Image (cartoon, rainbow, N blue to C red; front, top):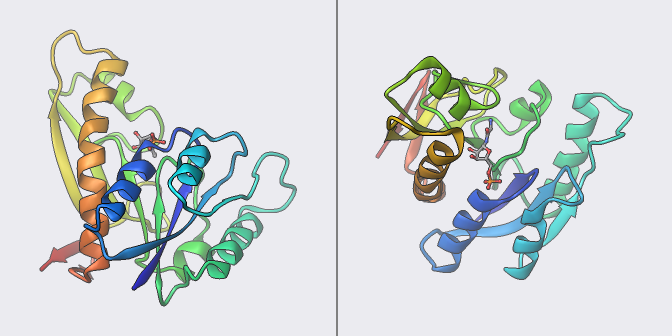
Length: 205
Ligand code: GAR
């Protein structure tokens, strides 16, 4: 069975939805470790209460380069069996850019959830960006992580209609509901080896 490492920075609701799906025996993967770059991330407590090992690799005040920081993260992942051969790394609200070294070493084994229909509204505050742009639809995207910012091959997307009178908060809430649905589904597909990457495309069998 594959080993799963989840990287978080805060609330951890996507992490929780993945862990819950695994617990319900829906996903054949072992939740090996949750790593946060912030010691006070709320998600750490949730992971702990669900019986999953937690680790902090603090980024604040870290004197080294991005690559050096990621090296530490990779070391922790390996210690828990989340290796480039036998692991999957899920970014779940992990608010850091991943170094090319990390991406290369875990090629097509790092996935992320983004609260917009990529390639629209990458980066931060995607829900705010969608509202400011006047988009009629937004949503969320699960994708492989490559060296760019929110640019890797797309695995799954869900569409959310933007209503008149939506605020950043109301739209984020409806998008988050879809995030919680598609992220565990994507992890499930990966765990069952049903995703093949072909150039920019993913093929789901
Ligand atoms: C989620 O909405 C996720 O899509 C977003 O951060 C939130 C984390 O919430 N990620 C990004 O914006 C990445 N660019 P969570 O900690 O409750 O899962």
